[in-house]
Image (cartoon, one colour):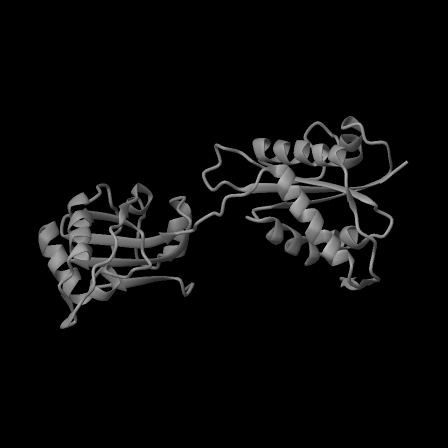
Length: 279
């Protein structure tokens, strides 16, 4: 089991959870605001938890991995724990049982969200800290950040897979290649695919030409899911083929961009880096 995701079972796990027990979430928040004591010692208050519907929809049964259940519910958690109890007839009784046994967990400062549910005398609490996605700069600024990182990488000798490269000269920013990168990132984000060839059949050289770039040589790196320019460049440098593009001394110019489909709940970024040698 992933170390950031664990169960705190008291009795049997739930198999179906058709309703959310908001009252229990409210009682847990009231406890966090004024915990009194925990394990016989005075306890400091903790911040209130946000009731998160996705956490209330999680189904925990025998053999369930909490991490997998969170993924199925569409909730990205940096840390989560689940508590299940069987027996209490109502939310207040459930709170009394959970509070006595799991007071440290209930008032843990790292949690920011809660989802609760019950069927009959079976009760479930899921506490979580969501993944915080840092805001990205506008794509031209992110592209220029990539340029700085790439030029720093090119300044040092590097081995990409089994191919050794000496230091290479810095690349210059080319706005036409930036536009070609943006077009491809946007197309991948909107149509939800990951490939150098677009559904219409166009390839990197075609997109550079359509952007108005007169080229003698064109190359392209793509990535998906990285949350910062630093992560994108690091992933390329870890891949022999992408790394070879970055270190290729025959490239002299570059453009880069990212795009995110606003309808994508996880705000997955699609990154494109286009290299060029002008004619």
